[in-house]
Length: 264
Ligand code: IPE
Ligand code: IPE
Ligand code: MG
Image (cartoon, rainbow, N blue to C red; front, side):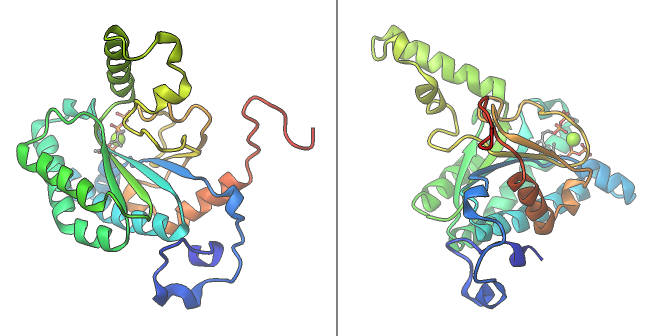
């Protein structure tokens, strides 16, 4: 069980303490600070069971709830998940509508529990195509959880990395044109802090479920040196145990960042 692998995060519920080993098998220094997940395969999961795609998305939402809780208990600092891309509007109307309603009801149902578990929720992506009601719920959830000290949970909704980068470029160009910033002051740190993930460390571990080996326009700048982990498991079947396995795999990677490894 993953609870046997990790020492547990700051907010591990007291009732679970008895299960935890006194020392983590995985050293805190090899824990990824920022984990990103492309939650793919809801449709294929449903198809394999002869179910509707909607049933797949509902099952995916239940998995998300379990994974946020697990990430929080494991002591992951930032978890960013891909829920809806700027390209997903190309899907049939009915599926898009279903997904948007699912996000809305997920927020309505889960926000109290997420808040109680100290999760800090933040949305990344464009906010210009959502209904007033959903926008209001998003903002309310962000304000309510803003001072929480548990996992920082970024939910990417109407998110595309190229769109995010362009929005940042435009905003910096406007500031430069207004004389508020000199072009030479725009460095990696300034740029990172102009993105939707401002303030978050770069992605350490990038996970994609359901077997496709691509990034699909997710966190391209932030994942410059991320370790990639692909699994054939469809998102609804992804478990805290598999997240723990991905983190164990990550702990064994040799991250050189362009340099040489310690022994060299
Ligand atoms: C991921 O599952 C959820 C979203 C993209 C919203 P998919 O709906 O992409 O599932 P597959 O890839 O068709 O199996
Ligand atoms: C990526 O999955 C987006 C989300 C998981 C929200 P897609 O299913 O949209 O990706 P492609 O189309 O296979 O690249
Ligand atoms: Mg897909």
